Amino acid sequence: MTANKNLIKGETGDWEIVIGMEVHAQVLSESKLFSGAATAFGAEPNAQVSFVDAAMPGMLPVINKKCVEQAVRTGLGINAKINLYSVFDRKNYFYADLPSGYQISQFKDPIVGEGKIELDMPDGSTRTIGVTRLHLEQDAGKSLHDQNPTESYIDLNRSGVALMEIVSEPDLRSAEEAGLYLKKLRTILRYLGTCDGNMDEGSMRADVNVSVRKPGGPLGTRCEIKNVNSMRFVVQAVEYESRRQIEIIEAGGVIKQETRLFDNAKGETRSMRSKEEAHDYRYFPDPDLLPLILDEAWVANIKATLPELPDDRKNRYMRDFGLTPYDAGVLVAERDTALYFEAAAKGRDGKMAANWVMGELFGALNKENKSIVDSPVSADALGGLLDLILNNTISGRTAKEVFEEMYSSGKPATNIVQEKGLEQVSDVGALEKAIDDVIAQNPDKVTEYRSGKDKLFGFFVGQVMKNTGGKANPALVNELLKKKLA
Ligand code: ADP
Ligand code: MG
Image (cartoon, rainbow, N blue to C red; front, side, top):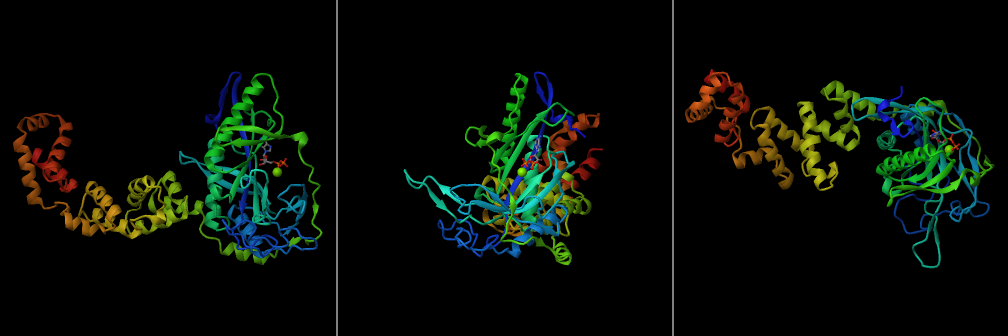
């Protein structure tokens, strides 16, 4: 089970990294978990705050059905057990941006129990990571320290926004796996439409628990790195933190369980508070809220509306289009990419379409930092170009030139090919003449070839292509050349 390639070499031998993640994902919903205030990103501070969110005395929370549905949907999407009975608890602590003095969360009885998430490894294999639970909770407000030199302000827009906390088992074994886990979870949430996954806007953030141990040994003491907000930072944080722990242990020290911060600019983790300073939250069931009881049929209804999820879609691409696991994994990672690919591949050669999407198209889009929905070449337009290759109107090489022109001008492939006279020459007479010319111009090479220097064949093909301005049908040139040189 232990993937040996993940072991880290230390001075006292090999070390294994163990990681478990707690991901906070903001529920996609128009309004908050227990109030009707809006959740849209980027509003003026305190423009989206109800009396409940501001914890005015006597205000009562009312559960938002949509948020419950989103949590159940997410649970079903990660193959998890849905708990028909769950309880909202008060998690008590004082903080300036938490006016009620407690956060409503779920502790002993979460809405979703054990599930699993498949990682798509770069070598095409998969790894199953256990999910311990998913629970619903409220977000807190935000302290603003950069608006005034001497005062701090509070923005309660986030206060009461619904979050899903998704806790993994300590099953991850490398920085890379931690990054892939977050990536896959984000893909699933986006497919489900339960979280927008915008990490820059804080819609998803991860607490990363890291420990190290000798391979096969008991689990080591962990440190928790709070609020890491990008895939890249998760990878960097695990790399730094595991190295730090190994160095301490190898120097004869012990790891103290603590909460740490990741400094994005320096790429290092720093102590925030130790276990001894950890809060006692004095959880107890919120007396303002009844236990949440779900109807089995309601859950079944939600299950019936789940879209095709990334793993199923990946398997379908491998089966129906003959794609490799890696290519299929890349194409399904974003739903928009998958839809584009399917439209371009429909009724054509799936492997060819995949190569064009992942090669030329991604290349062009990446250069301009554009997403596929803003592609100047639509899926249909790319399909049109593929058709011209498939029916031998143009060669694959010419097609790359045509693609560039399509990308910059927005014109369809057929127009560009006609305007520029790029049609492939498949006329046998014309090709034979071009071949005869090349043979006549290179008598020495012909002799060498005939006396056994097979490698020269490529040279002849190259010359014919050159003399026809790259427009000769390569398959036909090969066939005719073989005959003439025999
Ligand atoms: P707590 O109740 O203190 O938050 P949990 O048992 O809920 O602790 O675990 C929190 C997270 O830490 C989970 O994602 C879990 O997988 C992870 N975790 C637990 N033990 C370890 C360990 N020894 N090394 C790395 N991660 C761990
Ligand atoms: Mg926890």
